[in-house]
Image (cartoon, rainbow, N blue to C red; front, top):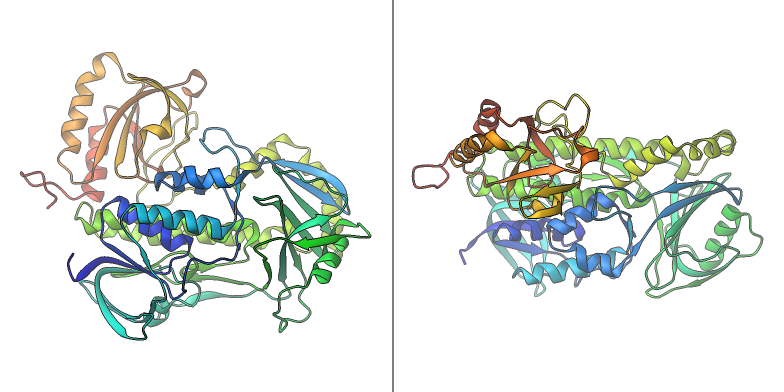
Length: 527
């Protein structure tokens, strides 16, 4: 192994582990360091939404994580103790129909096992204390468990170390935003004695004046209680006591007597929040991912999920640029796409009046409007779309080219839905045919005289360094209007559509690959 590593990843939380796994899938030499002595044993975030589960499948982690979690089916809203509506959370066109209730410490342990399978261990009790970034790479000063400082060279350094990122501060990258005022979140994992039945597939949201409480099942039979409240004493930081949480649950539900027995491992926390996004997520050979790049109130586990999406977005791009398959500009699209995603999530969190403590006027509006909204199938479907993160697109990205079809359906920048399709080998799900290790050129319903076109496309893509697989599929009958015969989709490794055009449009494919791929030389290597 050379003295200069391909990538140093600082931080071994779920985002850092996801990125390290993604890079190891591509065969890069990765050093992962974390100042903690071991994987965190605090439950923290407790839900993984459907799109993030798809990213974990691409990294080879999903089966183990799904086996440990609880699949959620519904979110039940109660206002002053009365049912106001039900949000269905299951989705079609995915191998992961429902969100998964599983706590962050379990996720991290399973991801660490996957990283170990790929031949990489986390170097614990090792803190990054200095970094210098140049045109050809970086020098990272690491203080190990023996107190000695060693300098490691790397072609790339990635900060996944949290909101106080050494890399971000050293490079002078601003962390724009502000602290949320008059908002706190108190949390406790417990087995309750109250009037609600335990349902392992239902999360309950209780809304009352000046308090919103979420009660979600977690593996093992306990319930995660977390409540958003006004913050009259922002200097109070100790975790909530059991009596305090019992009083909060009673106030939210309207039940006069509530008992809570903390579960093991014990988790109680009091948190405040900032809404911040780094001014840029890339500075040459240094990149920011997860909480190093953006933070906000962790309603619904959005910090964990958006961090996983960011690592999934960056991994294949960093590998492609490192190997010389793609121009350096490809990495800049990580910055633009992930910042746009983060801004979208932050806006949604600030406007989420349903899950924030309502004042008197807001509470009156919620009591009136929420039952009406939840009775609308269209609004419930839109809510499920947003919760799943399937609607998060990259349509504004420079990587998205072509136009949507006349009848709608997925277009440039959209996630490719996991539709049932027919291939020469039989019926399959579309995502089973994709791979995180390569792009995929999908020819929809091409047949008969189109064989010559398929040969021409293969000859065309062989001139470029980016790995591209070729597939011909025919969607199920009900999907053919959105993906009609003769459609050509160039799908990115992360499952988003890069180009949509017609199967005979070699000019569009050539223009796209001229921009985003390096050519091969006559020996078949990237130049």
